[in-house]
Length: 211
Image 1 (cartoon, rainbow, N blue to C red):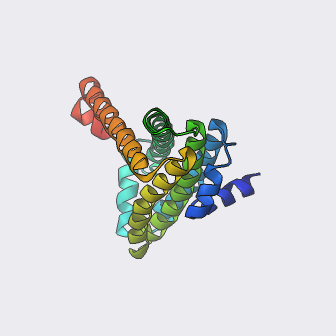
Image 2 (spheres, rainbow, N blue to C red; image 1 turned 90 degrees about the vertical axis):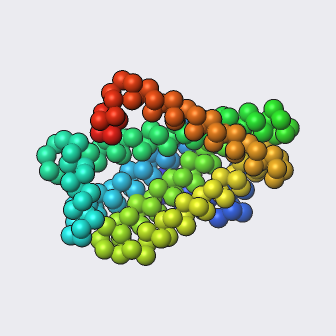
């Protein structure tokens, strides 16, 4: 089961396979969340290996940064908080994007897809990206800077895959897809700003930076 799931994640990085997955109409929220959580575990494990095995200056700086969150100099507390935050924020952002983008596609452009299916395929894509970024960061922490450039390219490529998935799930045209992506991201940005403002009001600047 898990082997097939990880295989599907990496196949989703290929546009024509992503289109196939998008049109299957059998994805569920549960399967999407499971895929992303498993991928995040692998990705953060790779980063942890780099932090605690690497001897580069970057590894030492990350250990110090993570150690400020508690649980001693090992930084285990910081790594745990960072991991949980990454998983929750990733799932939350994908849920919100899928719902808002899907609503836009159906309401304004006659889309026939399901936002749950969009969420599922996005979790496959982002799950694979989390693992690859973890591998790139591992190599970067160990002293190689080339993979860090590949991580930037992968992040840019992920926006194209977002476009492919949204268009394939709802069967809408290029202008409609772009409009839905922009609307969904505007909503995400507004909510993020409101969240930061709320945290500033509750914890103050120092508290927000600590989080």
